[in-house]
Image (tube, rainbow, N blue to C red; front, top):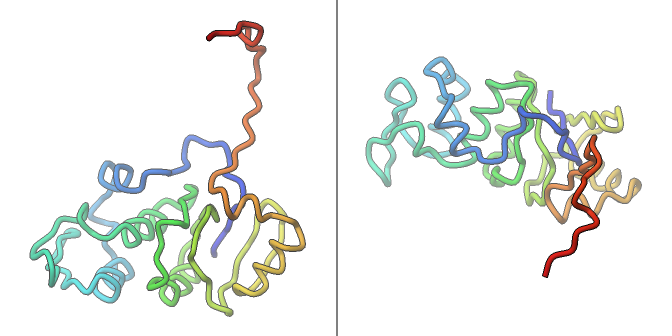
Length: 173
C-alpha cells in the first residue's frame, strides 16, 4: 500500500539523498523480479545479475548507476518504514508504481513533485487517517485541506526544540 505524507515525519529513517542511501545499503536480495522489471521496462536495460545491467546508452553499469527513480523505488520496496521523496520519480513510473504499491508497503513524501498518480491508484494519507483513490481525488483533498504550501515548497518540517536556546537574546552583526 502507498502511504503518502504531506509533512516529513521527524525520524532518522527518512531518506532525502537517495543516491548515497541506496549506494550505501543496497543488497543483492533487493534485485527481485519486480526490481528487474523496473530496470528492464523503465530504464530499458538488460538485467545481468546482482544489480548489474547492460544499458543501451552506457554499456555495463553497476546498481549505483541506475536512474534516480528506479533506485528510489527499489529502496522504498525494501525499506517499508522509510519515507522517500516522491520528487525523485518521473512520470514514466506511474503505471508500474501502482503495481508496486499493490505488492509492497511504500512511503513517500509529497514534496513539490510533478508525479501524477493514475486514477485507480489507492493512496493512504496517514496524517489524516484517510484513504483516497487517484490523482483527482488527491487534488480535491489538497484543496479541501488547504495543503498547497506543502505541495509547492517541498519539505515543510515544523521544528520544535525540546530545550531552551540560551543564545536567542544574542545579536550578531
